[in-house]
Image 1: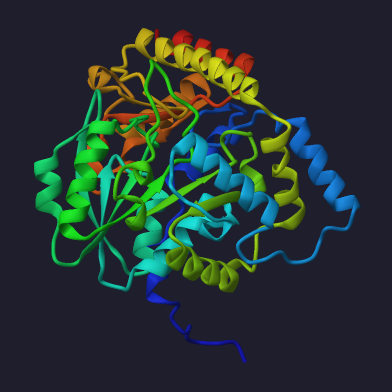
Image 2 (image 1 turned 135 degrees about the vertical axis):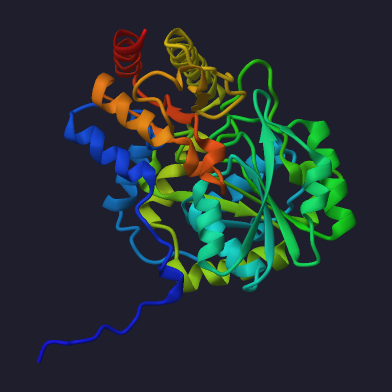
Length: 395
């Protein structure tokens, strides 16, 4: 007999909805447009990485790895965070390879927090951080940063800390704002963390994408910070391999051990052939690759920002990452620009360009009413075409 009633799903699923990012992707596909919304980098993965992964497959390197990843890769990551990030980790046992940096974030949340704990997020925030916290019963508390430099009000931050607050999430360079946290800001933040005995979770996935002489500073590199910091990063953005789902976490061994055990329970391990593949990034690809990548992203940033300025947007040029989080408030009285959702639809319909509505990055949708996020991680001819379409339609 057919069921006449449905047993309820878990309450944690009730607020889950398709994101605005996925929705706009469908709209763009329907008009055969250019998607500058979803943070998908469609540039090619470097050949040395692909070749080594293929070799691993041919050599039948196909069984489970250690839950924290193969030793070679963890050792290479350790050497990288010591030299580039200045993080005082001392053993591969302080490194965990994961299913993307998002997998590392899930393991972090499950290792650190109980339902009812509070975590501070800076707005505009990366939606996955907020949504994963809420999925596991952790309460976000929000502190605004202000354009154009996305400055932090440390008085507001201090006021946001309660007896339930357990951690602060720092995204540098940030998605969507492109903010790069300065040494001075992070020093002040570490002081606050020590006074209130808080953890820091730092998402540094865009760490090599820096503009206008901005410097990447890992919070865990600051005096006294490593013992209370979980550093997350990965390979998706730097090496154009978002679908490979390879990221990592670095933290003191007592923390990373629990995260690794959770990684084992939830994911078992990251895909073995792909772990072998990414080892080539460390031993075959030198600084010349990163220099070339950054030079090309500078070109893309200029194309995107100048096009948006040409059509009347207010554009804080990003300090890092590969997004432009711009304001169309100067156009709000024009047809089709009444709010962010309407503007996103207008850009698809009139210019064939997809973007993301600003409300996706704020607790209160009104705070993102006049913002759109553009991703410029595209092949340059494709990005030029998108910019030309925007200028032709609205310039």
